[in-house]
Structure formats: structure tokens, C-alpha cells
Image (cartoon, rainbow, N blue to C red):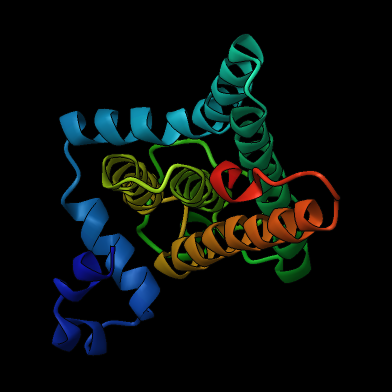
Length: 203
């Protein structure tokens, strides 16, 4: 995502009335086309489904196989999504930042987006899902597609005109951080319970 930001011309930013956040969104809006807009809408719309479906699938697999390690992983994934949602919405209503299309002259949105802007809820949930999935299943073939999807969700929120780059960056940090903290909390919790020795493979 940071690479995308570097592609914009800093000289042009200085010559406009827009902040860097706003200028990036204006540049993105001017490059929109119908095909890409549809793709990014579809990507954005996968966020809620993935944050529910991934933990649910792992929990169900654990129940079917009667595998406590897999079940713990699924519960951890769900806890991470719930924690980042709680933190994100608390911050949204604490900061009360207006959506970019509401305060940036000439900027239009092409997707739904209500409530305060900072941080991006879609991005935080996507990165919580990607991070918790990677920590639960530490394989490159899990991490690469998980983070590619999460990054595309964050990019889509900017492309569609409903979030600033700083909203997306904050969302990514909150999501990944929430998943990591829940990982540490789960390790500590299960270590405190005598007779439970499968925490390390579980999380």
C-alpha cells in the first residue's frame, strides 16, 4: 500500500489546496474506470463475509475432527475480529472524522460508507483476519494470499472514495495489532491452565 502512495507527484501536491490525503484520493478518482470500480466494490464487499466465514470454517473443522487445537484456532480468529471491531468503532466515534467525499471539493464516492471515517473499519477487520490467520497457520501460502486480500481491501476503500489513506493505514495497524495482542493473550491464558499443553501448535 505504501508503494502506491509513493507513485504520486509530491510537487503537484504542494501546488494544490488539498492535503496529501486528499490529493491521493483525487488522483485515484481521476483514474477510475467502470471495470476497476466493479472489482474494487466486490473486494470491499468481501470483508464482512470473510471475517465471519474464515473463523466459522475453522471452528466447524475443529468440531468435525474433534480437534481441540483447530477449534482453539477458530475461536482465536473470531476473537481477533471482534476485538478489532470494538477498538475501531470506539476510535471512530472518539475522533469523529468526516468522510473524505464530504469535505473534499470535487471528490465523489462510488460506494457506500457511513459513519465517521477514522480509522477504516473494513481495513482493520481485513488485517485482523489476515494476521490472525497467519499466526494460527504460519505458512507462506496462508500469509501471502491473506495479506494480499487485506491490502486490496484497504486500497479499495481509497479507490472508492470513502476513506483517506491515513484511515486505511490506521485500520491496518489496529487490525494487525489487535490480532497480535489476542494471540499473546491466548498464549498467556492457556499457559495458566494446568494440563493444557497444546497451546503452541494451536496458536
